[in-house]
Image (cartoon, rainbow, N blue to C red):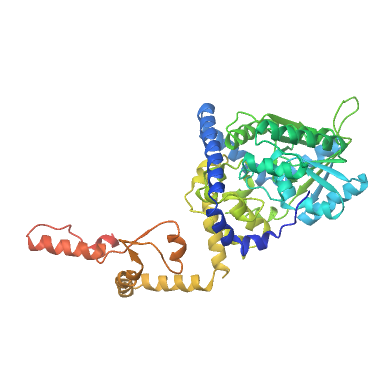
Amino acid sequence: MSGQAIDEKQLIGTGLKKRTEEALANDFLRKAVAFTTDKLRTGKRQAMDDFGHWEEWRERARAIRKHVVENLDYYLTQFSDNVAKTGGHVYFCQSGEEAVRTFLDIAEKRRAKLVAKGKSMVSEEIHLNHRLEEKGIEAIETDLGEYILQLAKETPSHLIIPAIHKNKQQIADIFSAESGESFAPETKVLAGYARQRLRNYFLEADIGLTGCNFAVAESGSITLVSNEGNGRMVSTLPKCHVVVMGMERLVPSYDDLEVVLNMLARSATGQKLTTYTSMITGPRREGELDGPEELHVIVLDNGRSAQLGDPVFQEVLHCIRCAACLNVCPVYRHVGGHTYGSVYSGPIGAVLTPLLQQDMKEAGQLAYASSLCGACYEACPVKIPLHDMLVQLRARKVKLGLTPLAERVAFKTYQTAFGNVTLYRMAAKSVYYLQKPLIRKGYIKQGIGPLAGWTQSRFLPMKPKKSFRERWEELQRELKAQGRPGSGASAQGGDRA
């Protein structure tokens, strides 16, 4: 049930273009993703209007995240000390491999054979399910969307709605194949089956595993937000609860938590608050009726600390994983999340993946999966300038000499031509004649080379025989011949001004 391991670098690199073409050819995928992201955007806009003073709240949330990241060592120490005071255990792991080994050590001590999982992007990041499967430990996803994808042996397509690309009929087919029964494509029927199947896993699991939306440093508390009850079941019924969290997922106090929870729910789904907001402080104490006997918190670095102190990329650690940037991104809305070949998709994934993997050769290609329109920045509740970061990632890739040879030659030629007036005019003139074989009814409808990708889905206007400069100079001559005053400046003079 855990699915197959994923070589993300291979997927991101050689498969990026192929997956993009497949996604663009998949009409159902495009409609499904566009429909759901439209719904989420509409909900967010309504929530913003109802909330009021949205920009002030954005600035407050940004300030909180900025302060935490700039003082991360202090708050990690405070959080760790407070978890220990409440009876929990904290493990700081430099890499994904170390985090997996830590979890396996805990599982071995518990002689665990079954792990019930709540939603956790970090566990996806370190491919924990596959490693557990190798050790003979069954890991069951209990989030409905994640459970569907686990049965389908697929990875999440969206940060908060992992099965955004599936419809009810597809889900019914998946459940029917799993159970041997036939299910109608109705929400109540499908949810009822999943509820029945998952109930025993909560009761039988040796370990409950969750992610962490925010950790509160002043109390050592773990905060989970969910619109399903599985989060509370996973974190209270098994005798051992393991939390896997990114090292940046901290807020200093409950006052700060109030701000980011407000921004998270409204930005993600347009809700005032998620259906379930759970705050977990330590394992079960004497006299308490529920809760685990043990609480273990695995704090993961995995490339995050490498961004600390970076004047451009440190802000990527401010992200609260609301997915608002995905819902407005014109690229994501057309191709969905699997095209990115990474756990993290959309604009945040295009920035975060190459930084965490510290791989500009393959993962760095994701920086080009953007129109640089800036919609992600406008949507981000903590004002992360993702569009600027994408430009900087492209520049880093160029400086490292990792762009294709043909691209480097093309831009060198471009630089030479635009740096010399004579060459520029010759090049501009020659384009008119070179384009003729490609023109159909005034447009270039089937380009060659780099133009082929562009003209697959749009037309490219043809270059006119006379340029603006030539037409302007003709106009000046005509006005002068008629004894009428011209503009007082040539085209070249106007450009210099």
